[in-house]
Image: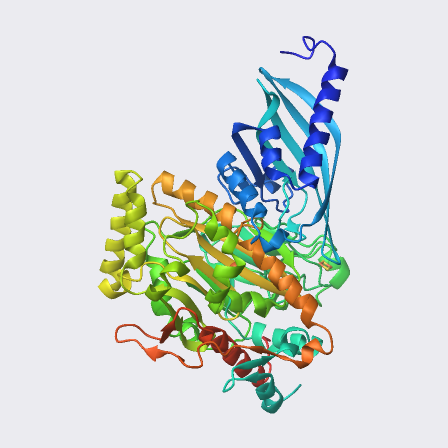
Length: 171
Length: 439
Ligand code: FES
Ligand SMILES: [Fe+2]
């Protein structure tokens, strides 16, 4: 597939954007099991590297064998979802209020699938007075499945070198 | 808040009560930065993070930013990260390799041994009046590496690191010696802020076995391999060990339980992994003897004041954590994962991924802890809240006994002996005058 063979790039853009908006709705509602089902393939690799300050931009993003903030497969994402559903996960009970803002979507064909990048702003308000924003970029690899587009690799590059808080949110 | 009398009232060791004020009072915070952080052996980094000459990382000692660098001759040095001219931070990268640290304010440059090596327009600007010998980077006077762990102390008159660690070294040796290829830090430092006093984080690692079943209850219910094979469910096998000078170990098993649990788990893995575990244990026997080999992994604990660690198994991460004090109720958590460089690839991979999933800023254990600390702070910081004490009476009936084979005071797993050990040391240091720091 190349951009020329995509019949209407505007339609594709619309389709992927709707995918992200639907995903955001599930995340905002804390419906994590549904989120995993509607978003990812079975072989999803969900990864967020550590950011550090370095003159060389590329070196500021730690690599795959280095320390990471998220490095999950589908089984572990599901374990996280199960934990949040349990009445014992005090870190998210009562739940935080979350808003996801997904913008600047760019789509490139990649083999049979798609490679997308978009900007992400997540706002978390929690209990009476906690307010945190997380800012970064999603880099997703999409594959067509029988159920429609699904992501098989998500890299989230947050801009923070020092995170505002320990993370109880997905990106 | 000066003198031992006031401090004695804040930490009541006989009734095991600690005033909530020490977690919130601005004056106490300022004093502990002077009296504790400027006189303690503080962890600044691991040598495996700076293998080559010119390699450096940055860290904090208390509130002071420092650079740990391997100089051109290969020696590890620690400097205040502040230009001697007008104080600009001379190194703004978190890590890297360099020949010189060049201050971007007016361009003074320092070699990796700290010497002032270049002053722009020196002749025109200073003539002969600048004695460059005297204006090198301020070097931390005492720096000692133990098993690659670099500790530094601003107090030139401080006891040696060996004396500081005391009998804690007997236990720490196990972490240093078990890895076949030595403790190796993964690249990357993870940092996150938390609304908490630094001591709440330290005492949590020092001895809070009691919070595991409840705070982390949801984690233990999950059917995932990341859960330690020897947990609170095997509490009878586990012990609190109270060591010298405020150092603490919690969940020590003396009877080879942790090794047996590893071998049991490894039945599902390859022959290579089983052989690796046998080699780790054999190495411990050879280097430290059978009794210490039977301990095998330290569980979790805290080296006073703020180097916390956990390691439950040779198949689980060696995690190291430093709660940097930023304000009475604000910390920055810095954390690292170490592996055994010579472990089978499969083990290294497992260890790296497990750290991320459990202990990282997103880790399923770290998440619950942050909520606790934030809401302790919220509910305790008011003027009325601060009039109360925290209760550390768990263990009053079992203050710890000497062990026939191992040093320290040994008590049951559920105990607050270690927290009291930590606060006793804290009160001692707070009662002594502040260090006359360097120069
Ligand atoms: S502050 Fe560094 S050269 Fe002036
Ligand atoms: Fe905890």
